[in-house]
Image (cartoon, rainbow, N blue to C red; front, side):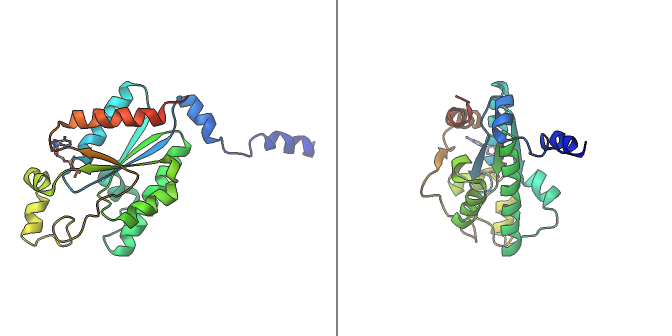
Length: 202
Ligand code: ADP
């Protein structure tokens, strides 16, 4: 009787594998990592991309400062240590979504190559698509969506990326998405075509 019980239990002693979930969704899990200056268009492109993928039947999740910094990372500030922990947790969340077969679209400035490398290391290079939202700082500053550049210029915000803190442009293995001369929808469509080649199940 005891042995039978054990046998029945053993059927349930493994978490369902990623492949099973990807088959269910008919897609491959992927992390899309948008990096770029504040106001470069990460959030706008992520939202448009999500809509485009959704229309084609793909399941996605957008992660950005709004749902991460105010939620799971609400106890973190902007010290070096906290920034590293912020990225570590975001990457671990991505891993969970990938194991569920979900396409995760991340919108974080992630200004240094070390920060992006750390995320890539945790998530795994095969599942990590780095996309540089390539918008010149003059344009980001003109847009000044949240009025942050004006504040940074006045010295009201310190260590603002692009003004008094560096942004390290990606050098290898990334998609270069230039936004200066296109609409958000055009940029998102361009990205969607690349993403589709990675998430369609063969
Ligand atoms: P970020 O998330 O990088 O801080 P946002 O997406 O919040 O940037 O803001 C970008 C702003 O730039 C939006 O107001 C958007 O409408 C505008 N914009 C103009 N052209 C583009 C484009 N081609 N791609 C993305 N955003 C664009």
